[in-house]
Length: 200
Image (cartoon, rainbow, N blue to C red; front, side):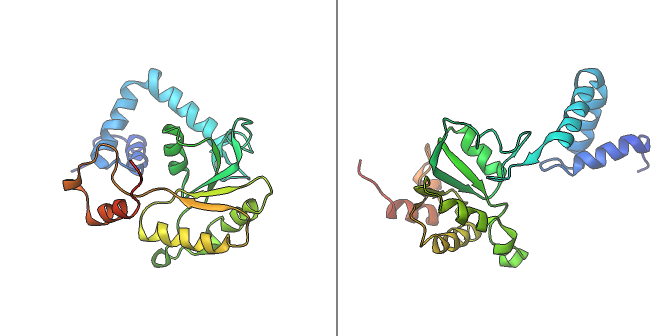
């Protein structure tokens, strides 16, 4: 099938198709919607993208992304400096914030250890985490990493490095999710839930 639009529109579609969750058909629909809503949507989006390009930066303390450095979370006086929550990615940090799960501070590793993908300790901000863990005000490191092989490997690696730091190292509980039905859960989740059972 030949091109149905000029190269500028095709370029817009191709760029949108690179976004996670958007395939070629969804990208075409999104592009068409943006073009139809040029004044109300495309122009403000274009401005927001330019501002993000100019102003968004990586926090030198925790690795979060923000328009200020150190980031909003690191400079918030209501945050508990005694707790550092370790996450693999900024998306995980945002998920914990949406859930209002902690008032601690964060440390973004950038990924998890994955030898198959060529991701080693030197590719993550582990050294900076170890340095932060040795600060006098830090009492607990919460490893909020995915319950995958790579996530757990990373958690064990970090735990070994924090042996000489005077901190408690904890991890997220694994088990039955809220609203979960036992019949639909996999064996690994059920066995983890049984091992980590608590008093009722």
